[in-house]
Amino acid sequence: MSFIDSLLSYWSAPHLLANFLIILNLIGALLLGLALGYERSYHGRAAGMRTYGLVCMVSAGVVLVSGYPEMWYGAQFANTNYHADPTRSIQGIVTGIGFLCGGVIMKEGFNISGLTTAASLWTVSAVGILVGVGLYGAAMSMVVCAIACMTLVSKIEAKLTARPAVAVMLRFKKDFSPVIEAIRKAVSNRGYMLASGSISISHSQGRTEWHFVVLAVDRAHGATLPNLSTELMALEGLEDFQLSHARN
Image (cartoon, rainbow, N blue to C red; front, side, top):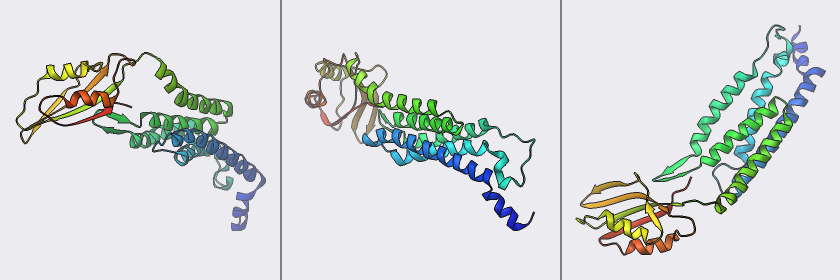
């Protein structure tokens, strides 16, 4: 086969048809990823439409490559006895997405954020895999279910019985020794209780610092952060404090 014939083999009718089908799949995966990413972008999360669209499209592309081994290299080196295994590509995708998911999870004190975003990135990679193997109905259903989960479940959670958690940091004046019973009473007055095993105490330059989580007795009776802060400010020997919702 001449050099010209080798080049033309990349533009043969079977190759053009294969490329056309792959492009349609990639566009479909991109659109599904964008739809899922919009929900995260709308809520101001770190990973938005571009990230989700790319993850979904690339996941589909990697699987699609293994679906056309007879078209590789212009079909010049095709081996009729060779059969690509898409499951190997899927394993690589799942492993690679794990590193990306780890990058969006942030931990600050008792607060962990990004878990839902990481889980949804993992989901969108599965959507791309489904598109790549041609299971379009399942891919679209997964996107709908994922969006419903991220938008509706939080509203359902808000109506269910729960015990909201608040992360608390208390820094006391120099050489002052706080009493745990006083702290327990202060948070109890506002409808909270100390979470078992959450207390962490540090001491630096003569000042004692307490970190712990308090749980509302129930959602209805737990005070707001401003009300809880008012109670804590009355603690004897308190110098600084910080309150934040212990969320994930």
